[in-house]
Amino acid sequence: MRLEILPVPGIGHVTEGDDLAALIAGAAGWLRDGDVLVVTSKIVSKAEGRLVDVPADGPERLAERDRVLAAETARVVATRGATRIVQTHHGFVMASAGIDASNVDKTRLVLLPVDPDASARALRAALRDRYGLDVAVIVSDTMGRPWRNGLTDVALGVAGLPAIRDHRGEVDPYGNELQLTQMAVVDELAGAGELVKGKCDEVPVAVVRGYLDATRDDDEGARTLVRDASLDLFSLGTAEARADGLRSAATLADGVGPASAEPAAVARAIAAVAGVVAPGTVFTHVTDEEVRAGLAATVPDWPAAATGLVLGAAPTPVDRPDLVRFGADLQRLRTALAAEGVASTLLPPPAGTTASATLAL
Image 1 (cartoon, rainbow, N blue to C red):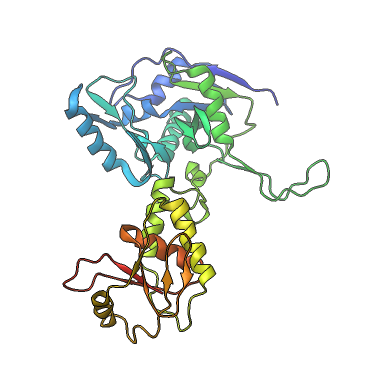
Image 2 (cartoon, helix red, strand yellow):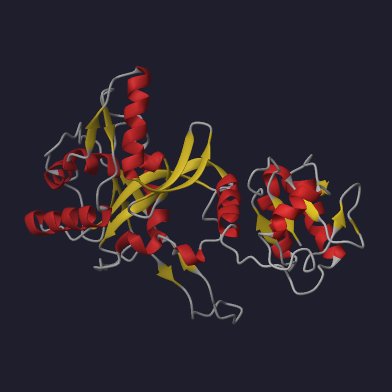
């Protein structure tokens, strides 16, 4: 295979309502059947009118941008400072939902196309029906990637070729059957096209020649590249995953165990939380008889069904049942205990007291 990557200069500024097929055909009269057009999503969005008006600067601009970002966001993945990584309504995980303020008037923002696959199909059909050109079309945009610096172009929409080259079931030269290999070829082609487009050269379209022998319609489009949530091992940022875990823990079934909790398991849970999740947390051994009396009305058969701990440098069991007070981070201890298989009950402060919530083991 011998590939050529060719820029398409001369398209000029694209505005709402422009005919992209006519602009591309006019600028690239040398197109051939089987070429792959890599079209920057921004000119697709401009032609389709996916622009919003915003103030040129100041806090009003930031507020309006935040409003637009919220509307384009299906789910917040991670936040750090002013950076927002979100999942769009298309399913793409991107910084700021792909909203772009470059190569556009200062009073406007460019949004992603509503349906990039449909945009690619429409452009492919127009070039075929009106100009007799049988080409594939990739609608591309720039993305960052987890664990790697730098940006690269990827495919948001595609028509005329499958998004993935599936090698599963093939045998390599050493006789090994491939089990997992699926290549995102449209992302690779989009990245190749970006090499001759650039951000400041006003070349929004590139042609990759030599990859296809013939085009092939595929109804799946680029949406097949969006990983199913059930298979996504990194669906949240660190802080968001921790918060989600605490929310999930709040729905765990409560109940005092029928047998005493194993002191070693409780000690491991406390050490994990105090040393890693909540360093500096103060544990308090509850001896206030009024507090204990108030809790007796909350937990059936209290205190006979509870196990006592004295918490100091290291937790040690005692002969009488007692309680652990864990301050504002009580829920974290409960979560850690659940991971150790220790049954517990999260108790609110008794009515008429100022005691913090308490954990019964």
